[in-house]
Length: 54
Image 1: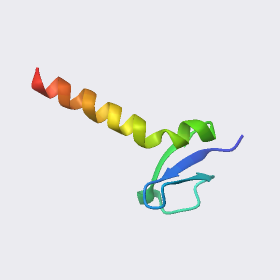
Image 2 (image 1 turned 90 degrees about the vertical axis):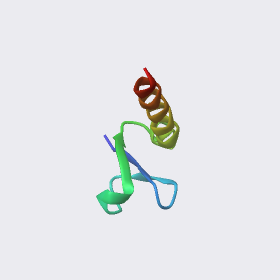
Image 3 (image 1 turned 30 degrees about the vertical axis):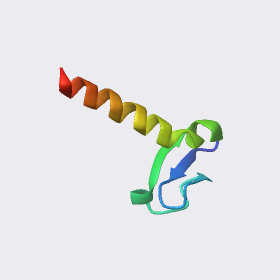
Image 4 (image 1 turned 90 degrees about the horizontal axis):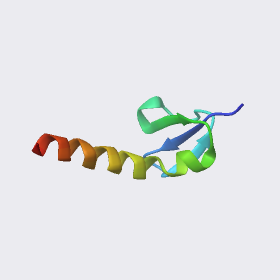
């Protein structure tokens, strides 16, 4: 089963880790999950910041 990675420099999904690990977020089980990587990062950051305000 392939793994999918989101490349933060190219903003593209890679099947298998093709780039340096410092450029990748993942792994994800599906391409669609990897495509949403930055959305998930934003959601987690917002939740983290909201927790800091409490």
